[in-house]
Image (cartoon, rainbow, N blue to C red):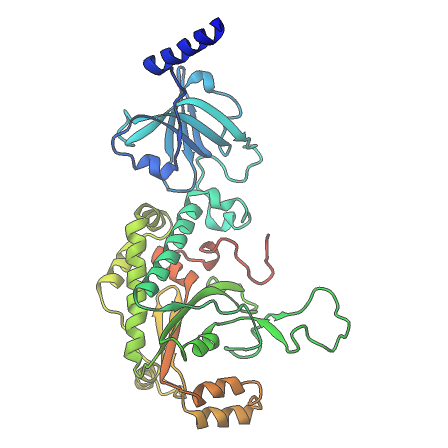
Length: 431
């Protein structure tokens, strides 16, 4: 009984005096920590990779980055924390107080109370060297490590932001997002550029196909979007496409991403051209607003002069001409070429990149398509395409934009292999 009374008295004492409790630490991204305006010693935990180490007699300085921003967070610690494990490339977890920095270079810094090394880095064997600016060509040899550099980190953050901006534009303008298939029996671009898909193990009857028809990796989602445009007036897709081109060009990949849209009740190229221009400008303005430091790094160290060219594109209307207009211009310039007029179509060409957008009005006349398919012996295979013109057809058109080429355009990156996380091209499929 006496013991119970003493325990009760102790509990009452704690409730009235408030017994000390360990401070709760808030886990923060580096980007969020750097954005704190009035740091007053909050207890936070930051996880990331060491970008630099500087040890002085009494103080240890670390710069930690978790990929959320170009800028790293400075960690200030007592020299007693110094060890061989705290090396460039090592992953760490740091707990401490977020305080106002005494340096003019940053707003805040993390005063470390606890530093835990999560994963060591063998710096001598690490292909990415401390304080060395590696050429993009060199980094292509290490697709599993190059994302840890400032250059690729900035490019991939811009890529992520541009993806979100494209979806935002289409959503705000009433487009329905369609997941078009990667496997298809259709060919939008012509024979010779397709990857055919077959089972890795031999099927029982070699003459049979897995899908009963030859299947390929898609080169475009256009035909499937045309199907959907018969039910939704505005549709788009954004996904991987594949071309089996034997090319080492700086503008070609075997796997790349396409932004494609299809719009019903369209009778003029001007309507398509307006959407193409709006998509480019709205996406780019959002990227510049959300990733200014990343874009600036690319313009400063990868493509000097690109900033001015990009500003000019955003301030002025695009000069977009149809194939018919282009043919007339070229006819006047030279008498040595023979030109064949095409269906109403338009391309947006960008210096240094080439074709960025390609669009056209689709052929909706049933009898014209029927005659062409009959001459090619494709009536049976594409009867569904004729049905689209037979049951409630409307004038429609669409366009596609190469996403990697768009990134090349706004960042000034010369080679398309440097704006995609894992480039696939002829003779190369690393990872």
